Length: 151
Image 1 (tube, rainbow, N blue to C red):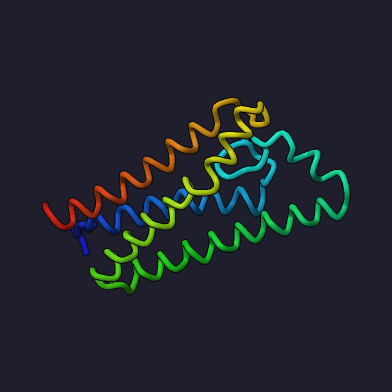
Image 2 (cartoon, rainbow, N blue to C red):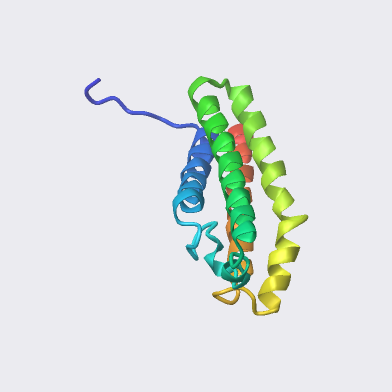
């Protein structure tokens, strides 16, 4: 194994980058949900207010952990694809990621952009940063497909 070089294909690299970032978001959601980075809910000024009653606090905790669990399932499925998936499976995984990540712009971005405009997000402009992050991920996925098929 001395001098062994591991060459990664662009599809695997894109999946690994996504898994690393989503893995960090999962840690934030499970262990630091009040954080104001990643998917932490500390950016929402109403987050603390919504936890004033025990039932609201439990409801919000349930939703946070549900989202973290869904993200964990998604990441672990991608890891399984990295380990055991064929080239075709990786292509379909990237296509699926493009479609699923794009849904952010359908429902989530309009909500966070409106909250940001209302001054309910700290720091101000966070919705633009999140939008840019999503666009970067989509660009990585699309470039991985282009490189895979054409280069």
